[in-house]
Length: 95
Image (cartoon, rainbow, N blue to C red; front, top):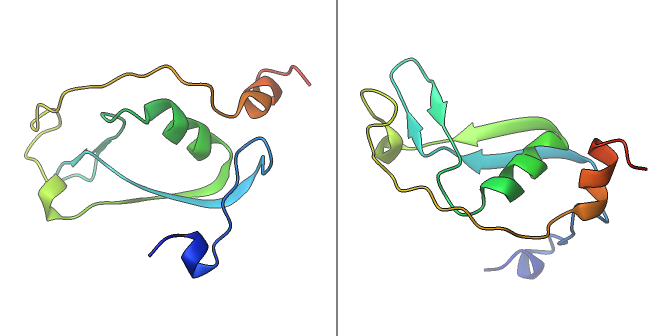
């Protein structure tokens, strides 16, 4: 099932500059509920979506539980990408 198949419209941050809610997962969570996010290749996009959202919900399951942060030794992936350029300009005061 896809978003469009469920009737959920897709948009970019250039066309929808503010979001009511963003939901994402964490890479790790420790017993005190401290989180590590952003080890995947979509780090920039995730941070931009979080920044323009009124509320942010982070979900995890037991596979993300660690005794101490940094325990999963996940490899960081960084990619350069043009995403939400208009929104980035607004955030920098370049209206």
